[in-house]
Length: 238
Figure 1 (tube, rainbow, N blue to C red):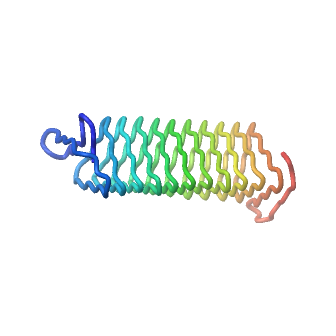
Figure 2 (cartoon, one colour; figure 1 turned 120 degrees about the vertical axis):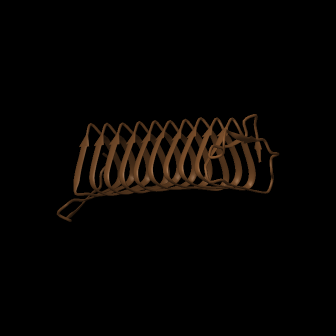
């Protein structure tokens, strides 16, 4: 299931253990106690499942029907992940950089996430985390849902055709471009700086709300619910 010169590495063993095994068209399962390392490798299988103390992939390719990774720490750099039906990533800490992710259904559960320079091509994205930072990304999806405590998105283009929703304590949005038919935001504190937001329906529930140098274009309905719990609805084009 790995095809590469470096193969896989389990860093918990003495020295470095590597292997290069044939590509498997059926289910692929790997379980190690230490860190599973993949360098310039290709993982191909119908259903791929990886379980380890840690997972590191650099310059790798995953091509599968389903992908499930369960680890304590995960780092992916300059890789291409393609899974036809779904991807499930579960980790205490996740860092994904300069990587393209293509799937129908992407679900990420993590304590902390730090991502930079990624391209997401999906139908559905669901992210559950205490702390998320997404920078310099391009996200093309039908729906995207964030359920977080702290969310920091910077220099990111999000095109969510149907719905974009965020539920979090503290949201910091800086220099982003968002397109979606419907945007729903529920937060205690929202700081929006130099953002461009385009939507038919925009609803924001907040305690503290600051829009600085931001462009918000709402074609049909804008709903604001502030700390006093009084709802304000405006029909506006901007």
